[in-house]
Each structure stands twice: as structure tokens, then as C-alpha cells.
Length: 319
Image (cartoon, rainbow, N blue to C red; front, top):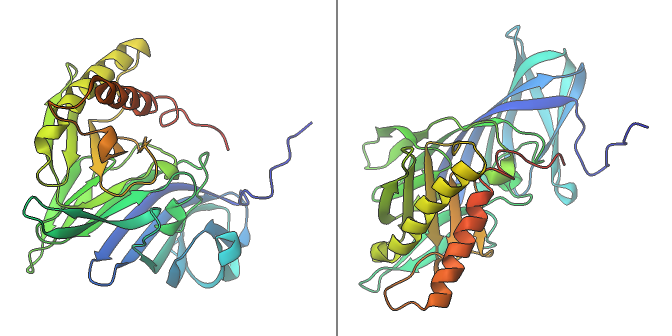
């Protein structure tokens, strides 16, 4: 008997293949402007495409097929269902297509999607950073998408980073393009095919310590200014963890770098974002005065989230 698809999952009319995502955050009013081009396979001719979207305003939407035909879309938002329906005047044929969307969203106070986090510098000054949390269903607050674990796709990210700040995401930085006001566009390398709930983006002031595994994987522990040395113990454990699991699973760590980031405001204990794990500060940072119990907890959580880089991130549940 064929298993019936649950009603809470989106129609399988289209399959995402790549999100080319540009995000421009505004730290004055805590909003962001987003543009995404979704490369997709249209599996059957249709006039409607349904995506997840939550707390986003979509200004423009159109679709181009492999025949270079452009289809403007009428957009219907369904906030209660966290969905957006794109309705076209003419039928979209089966085949390859690109859906291009221009939209705006919020850097919220709810510790999900893109959210703001405050921290205090050693001199007592309060600053604000932007962090992300997408598990389980909050990538849709950052980008209209098929926000289901089985709907894996590559993600190409570009973000505008204000002067004096750093951007961290799943993959290493590919290139930077400076602007006249001191800000810069930061382009990241393409991710492997991945689930949307593992997306990560942090923009703020960071400093840290780094090392490499014996296989050359760059490992970094990052925190807000003044806490650099507090990452040394976690760094040693993270390197040992990567080397241990590489041997245990008989499979190399699948990404070129592994970041562990301490976030001042964070709802979960830690999160296994692929290549950019986020932690509560108390579960990642330590000092020479920290107790044995504290260090044991840090090591335990690092090994837990590190294990997810293979099971959960590389190999993921179907639904």
C-alpha cells in the first residue's frame, strides 16, 4: 500500500535544487531585505507553486523557464499556514525553472529565524548582533522555501555586513566586495545539498581561537569580544571530536571548516547547524577556574552536536 503524504507537507509539484540567497540586514530598524533565486525542477505542468513563508512580505515574484520565458506571479500569503502561493496566468511547463523573489523580513526578538542578540563589551558598552535559529521550522522566516528536512538543496549565500562586523555561515567565505561606507558584501562558498533547518548566519563582532585537525579541517571557537581565551578548552575538544568521529564513521568530515559559536541570547542549549554549530555561552566557554562538571558538560555537548554533522546533517530523516 502506498503511504499517503501527510497534509501538513507541501505539494510535490516542484523540487528545489539551489537557493541563491542575498540578505541585506538593517541594524537601525532591525529589518532585512532579501532576494532569492530558487532553481527548481517543475515535476508537472502547473499554474501554482506553494512555498513556506512566515513573517515575510513578498514584493515581487516571477519565474523563468529554461526557454527564457518570464512568468510574473500573483502572490497570496497564508499567515496561519505559514505558506505563500504563487499563481501564474499561464501554465508553467514541466522542466527546469527559476523562481525569483524580492521580499522583506524582521530581525526579531523571538530567538528564531533571524533574531537580535545583545552583548556587553569589556568596557561596558552594549552592542547588538544578528543570529539565526532555523530548527525546526524557521528558515521560512528568512527565505521563502520548501522548509522540510527531505527537501534538500544547495544554498549560495551573500550578505551585506556592516563596518566592524563579521559574518559567519555554514561554509567558508569565498570573497568580499567592499562598499564606500565601510560595509562589504560577503559571499560564501556553496553548501552541499542540505536541509533548510541547518542554515546558519551570524553577523556581529567576533573573535576566537582556531586549530586544524590532522586531516586539515579548520576548527574555530568564536565568541563576542573579550572572551577569546575562554574558547581554548572547547577548541581542543572539538578537534579531538572531529578526529574521533572521522575514524569511527570511517568517513571524513564533509565540510572544509567547523565553527563553534557562542551566542549571548540562545533558546536551545546548542544547535547542529552544518559547519556552524551555535551554543549558549555557558555550554561552550570556560576558564581555568571552571569546575570539572562544567568542562564535562562542554565536552558532552560538543560531541553531541559534532555527531550530528554526520547523522542528521549528512544523512537526514525523510520528513
